[in-house]
Length: 55
Image (tube, rainbow, N blue to C red):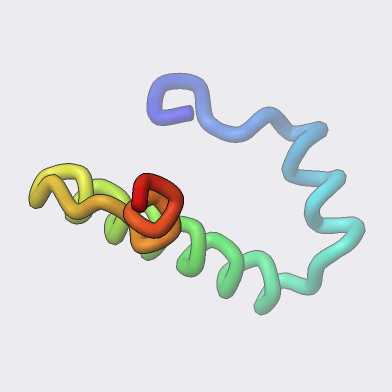
């Protein structure tokens, strides 16, 4: 997406379901989750569910 952007058809599909505010909120939520995931990977933090499954 960084190089090509979001295809117009995909944006229109999302816009038909979500309001403009909801699209903004969803975009921020996805970006924040991506940030948390990258931090967890960088710090070698294993998710709790995976630790429980290994025990």
